[in-house]
Image (cartoon, rainbow, N blue to C red; front, side, top):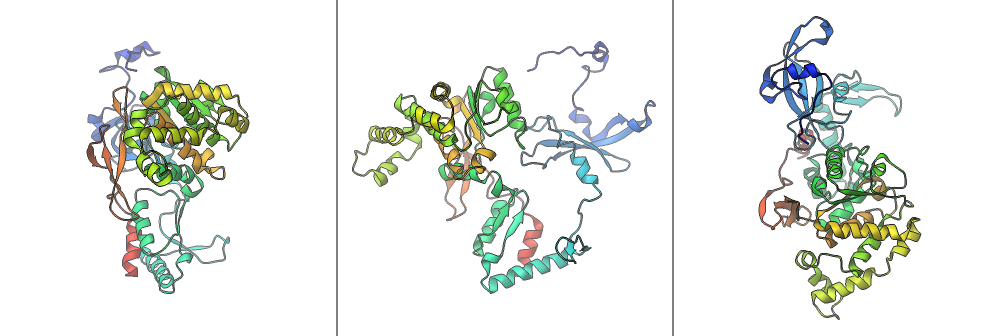
Length: 441
């Protein structure tokens, strides 16, 4: 990736110090000088400051830098931040387009209250004090009258404040949180969370030897820019990619295996792959023995059987024997041999297997959350959770008891040593929400 490239224009090599650069050097960010394009072809200098920030046009939170004119304090443009560890300065079009949101004449910059009928588009400007007093009063009255089911808290895209806000709502006996996530990633999150206690794994795509993607479009998915970079890097290094997708997406066109399946058949395919691994003894026995609750499972569900790991494996094989490649092929409309071949690739990769499922597969089908559970089961069978891949450690989380509905998480290294908190107990909270609470009390 660091090979010396010859520029198309040889004159670029004459530029100091090392030819053309993709980004201004960090040491010059406080006082960056560039020519004002409005005065071209004259070379009129414009002094700017380059300020790091974050793009939130999706939840990837890629790094941006704002180029701000010192004289007018106006933002000239947004560019990628080369120092950001996730996006590394390579942003999609939504990043630079942030400038449009800053200067959009229809941008809402203060509270508005509807004064006409719904749909009339009549609004009046009100103060923050009016808004907070009004909302707090309504919530307080509903709680006093035991009308908790009439309260709903809605945000477009929940961020760092989500956990804190849900604690408050739950403490009031309100199950009324709503957001974009409900119709997007909630299904996949649920499947992951029920199995692992966290709702979003972070696979090491860059160091994987085999990658399986389900409705996770690296070229079009809303927050897959950091993933896309590392998936392509892995592919260039020889990693194979499999895509389960009804349509031939751009991602599928780059895959080594494209399985065009019937929508809703994904769980059957994954369970068939799990069955292949189990019946052919291609799973990671040591990982299962040390990292899953097989003893509790046998005790609670199969107390009549011998309480040994060998007995547990036998139960697993018997339980999933019905999910044959032929069964899944009939459900999905593909050849059973492809399912077996991909399962063998997963087994061959072992702990260097990475995968992802998100929106369409899990959210677009009844019971779609089970797809995430089946995919996590496949990852667990080959030990691709919290393990070392090509010298890189997959970090994972363990639950630390803090209360019945609010677990804390600790980050661990591959050996299980606690290396620090993951930050769920900390973080900033939206100030307006706190003000509403304050006025209710």
